[in-house]
Length: 234
Image (cartoon, rainbow, N blue to C red; front, side, top):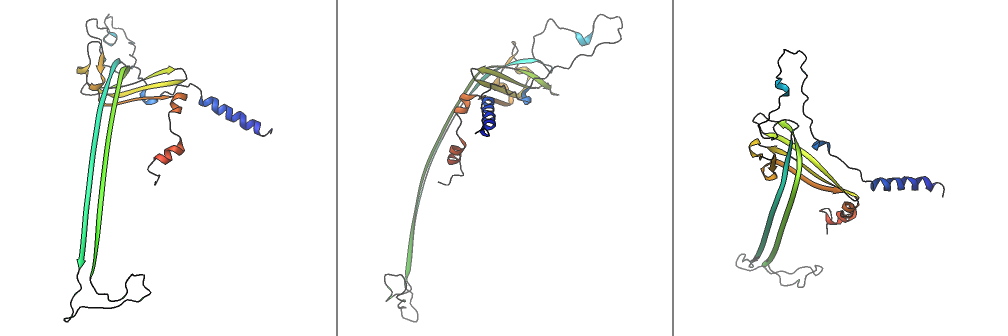
């Protein structure tokens, strides 16, 4: 009994670790900090410094690495597919008893053969086959995702387009909700309030996942997944 106590302690520790509400950030969606401006070492007496200038008469829109941009999630897709197939095939073939030298062959078979009639046989034979197949399939899928997420510019391309990415984590009760987004945007699509619609993002990758006890309860067990997979022959 005493030898089981350490094992129970380890199991309780694992269970408590599974129930912990630890946020699992994805490094691939981490924000990029802007490049620090080099400090001017030699002063030439001028007041203006081009590296630290601030423009007071321009829209605040993301254009540099590290700038923040708001993305409006406006994803909605509807897909429907239906198919029906019917195949039918009948085949009948018969060959009459041939005539050899003016006579039709007639012979008997050994009685040991598992045939209904072993006497007065000839070379005539025939066979037939019939195949019927009918299949029907239907698939329908609807997706809707709305909300806002702020992302940062991680790279400015040669043509002015920008690579953006970001992650939002929302902790509710005992679970976490993760919204991750990455893609390429054009500065011409950024609106005056420094926002852009998600439908204007090229090569967009948007994911909405969660963890915690509620999410775990909604996952099929490994044995059930086996019976529902293509590995199950029945």
